[in-house]
Image 1: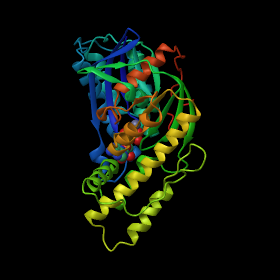
Image 2: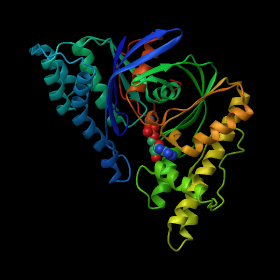
Image 3: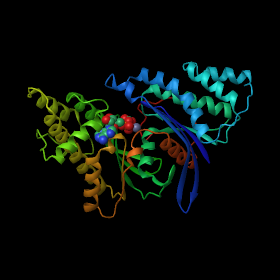
Image 4: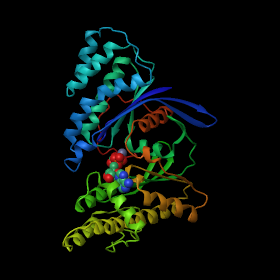
Length: 392
Ligand code: KG4
Ligand code: ZN
């Protein structure tokens, strides 16, 4: 089965074409085409992602990326053929808010013969709604023109699959049979949650942040320290430097909600504690950046480790999965790799390859494929769902 996938939930426009088959209980995903355009540099000028700017960029870039993906996958067979007027009218209706994408897709559909693709998977949420709509409408237009099914995908479920993949060769991955129940720690710019995975597609959220997402807290601390956006990688770099130079974590920061007895998180107080400390400094030196980054990162790591252990124990989990952009954090990865097997030697531990921690379309294709296997109903009214929960 071949799936074309589209991801536009935040600041990356991503498209991929993935072929699936099964071999000895393993699902194999062969990436035939994979293209991504990152808007990170553009948003960096503003210190964050602006939804309408993101939408504009997705509208401009999605058409060309679909074309490039089909070309890369050798699914671009030229055949000039006029589109029936009724189809143009329908596409115009679907893409009335994305005129550039309409023009690009009509051009594409006129230029090539229908490619051998079985379905289109697209991120329906969570994310920035204006951004999500671009991918959804692009996917709806193509699914209509090619008369193939649409599979709406939850972005966070995509991150889960990103974490369990193993590369078998260049552009080919195996998705192993995961033993359930599994605990997922999903940490990104918009999410911080501990989720019990009963089976693929069946999720129970055990706890989540009551205020800021952890990635957001990293980004805000970075800004306070005068570091660039996105701040997570920067804070992480400074913290690593502090450890390499034996510069202690300063100040002593709280471990928020460590003993709350539940699986919720809170990061706004931690951020405020950093703010108060910075306010006592005459100026922020490189050494301050190092010690504060270390203090912040280690506080976050401690909280995640303790709460994850508690959930693993209380729910008899067989597997641990970490996913989302913040799972690129080196200290967090090392700590979990070292600590979890000590207390839970039986548990399988999955961390995403660094290159797959960021948003991509391959994870959307894979989540779409598993959803297709579950034979969930084809949605007739697909809409952007900014706060779509995993347990929906
Ligand atoms: O999953 P993601 O790419 O996008 C969302 O869906 O939010 O996550 C982006 C977040 C940003 O807040 C970024 O600062 C953070 O992940 N991040 C990191 C690291 N790399 C990215 N945070 C901490 N350490 C890192 N190495
Ligand atoms: Zn993401």
